[in-house]
Image (cartoon, rainbow over all chains, first blue to last red; front, side):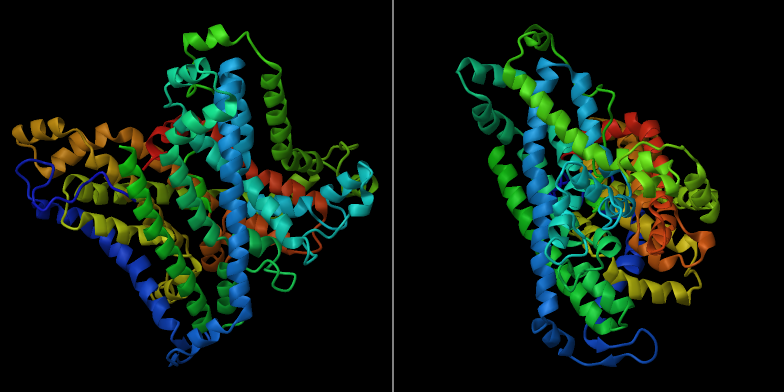
Length: 312
Length: 301
């Protein structure tokens, strides 16, 4: 979110002879539509979190009751603990794997073999990212079907039939399998972004490091990692926001279950909204999630700005 | 996740990966480690590809075949019946056209809105532009379910609930938030000399936008167009809540609907999934060069 357009105190635009106020008409369609589609619903939703409403009929103001209930609600806290694991699956593991894979692709495959095979391998890793999340989830749900799914069949074939399992239906395995599916969906994203960042790195830096006798790990630490910090920060920010908002895979694969073993905040509030018609309570959950996302984004952007300043 | 993940999309043609002459010299010296790295990466790629390969294999099986030999064997009696049955039962051509209309409209309108916003914020430097951008970014940060009830009420009142227009309006605003964020950063660094020359020639703001800013930033704009198209195509939650009638639904919704029917047999589901991903793969092939440029535009900022 750090912007190139620095906010100077003067009211001059970048177009000589034009005051910046003259540009306001260009903002009107954008701000008006933002107000109607985002700002008003956002405030409205906050208001709803202080009410009791069944979705139809009268809206009753109940003060802080929903919020008090939220604090004592074990399922709510469970949903945020699960969010932590979703972040591990969408941010932590793909970012680490993505760093390794993209640097090996750039550093070894592209240089020692050829750039065609590097691009081809990259495209294979990227494939799940292209699919609509709903479709990708349904495909993986199909693979993990308990009775006739491909994964159980594979276990049988390689002699591990005793491990066969209702993967998404067992409280012990549902969350790890969901995490595996999310890693599968996500992995291509950091790889592609990191590789594009690595194309910037001066090859002579690697050569100099090699001449100094640096091994692959040392080159990775000293040359690769520092040069793609901007990309690294962008990936962490966008992927964490995405992870906190995770809905589709949970809705389509586990419905938060079995029990509450895979419940996440988005699904929990959706469930309150549309299955239980507890609109006020659903609004409180989604407002809480929104606050977490905004606080994270602002704090992270501040850190990002500081890191980028230090690099200059 | 879609917002975040599709930020940068790339191609497989290798044109982004320059090979210098130095690379060629050292190419012949491949250590054991290099080969191990290659083999590990290919192994990983096979794991990534495995679900899709299995899916494609079973999409052309009969259910009898599947029950007899399981999901891991090749089809003994290849059939198109799963594909055709989903094609007919979901009215796939109609779902495809619905997705296409919605995604195209959002891409066009989203780009227009992003350009207007960014012109005012990046080049016009309207007072408080940083804060305005942050406000606009709310559209990306808010969890979509928090918007559902208010939007439902608004669109019901103006009679647009259960229409494609409602989805088009909502996603135009949501997508243009990212567009404004990216493009206003680009316009914030737009070459000053060009702007000065234009003002000496006496061009007014609208002329500067149309004749100078638009053509020069066209590469970034076309990348945004493709992103908006693909992201909107892939959306799920809001369309599910807003498009109730079969006649207005999109491709991902059609697949989710049949997945919800628990009696659905494995081969039909595989065929339906395969058919649903074909349009995405085709766009990828068509747009890959454009998306490729997006790496430069989108990676940082």
